[in-house]
Amino acid sequence: MSVKKTTTIVEQLRRAQMSELLAMGKRLDGRGVKDYRELRIDVGLIKKANGSALVSLGNTQVIAGIKVEVDEPFPDMPDKGLFICNAEVLPLASPYAEPGPPDEDAIELARVVDRGIRESEMIALDKLVLISGKKVYAVFADVSVLNSDGNLFDATSYAVVAALLTARIPKYDVQDDRLVKSEETIPLPINTIPVSVTMAKIGNNIIVDPTAEEEACMDARITMATDEHGRVCAIQKGGSGTFSLEQLSEVATLAVSIGREMREKISNVASRAREQVQEQEK
Image (tube, rainbow, N blue to C red; front, side, top):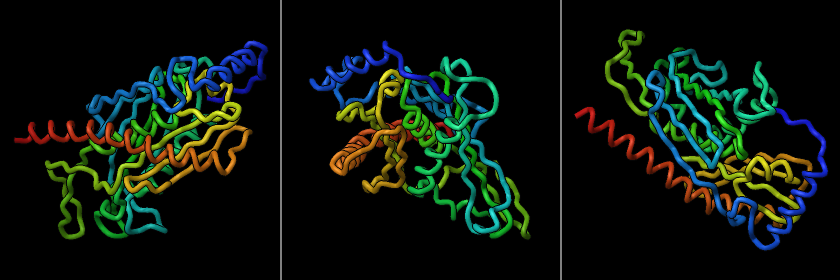
């Protein structure tokens, strides 16, 4: 969803209004500078998927589906399974979205989410090996943005993470170097829960979870993914503006503290879903 446009007088006035409010610690939608919009996560909506999650972050809405197949490993990683993330912004999601193959923004979205999951080692890829050097589980995350109202990075990350946490994959037994599919399903091997936190800089003010309107006025944006130990796993910077060392320290602290809150919300949703599965299997 590329947005290539010049700044209009109306947008300049809007930015001035935002700056005045931010100086008082307020925002156009009534939130404080460190407040997230309401987060809602619904899992298990796509019955044909191994796992799925619908995330609503304010008016931003994203759905993620997990599909697991048996495939050959990459030649340079014979003893690791595969994880691949793809994303698309549906034409109805935004006035700037167009039909066709994913554009550079959709590609960046998928890569940022992929990197946060991969660098945190959320999935124990070494435990997805079925036959060393020959057969492994391949985990595909497909994301569709249903409505774009800012902060797609976090909404998409939360959707994919929640879908992975609640996914069930087929179990295979190895007999004479052959795979025999079992009727049993098992969860993905999970090491940690990475959480993405996105912040925008408008003037000298740092805000979290920017709306589309705030993104249109921002000087710069930064997204940090952290794991359960508070370790920063991935960073993505956008916009032409810069962050001072003091501001970078501030956003890192926010990423860890807010990430802890968001991780608990995602984990609680996943735990309830797993409990329901266990009840159904009894």
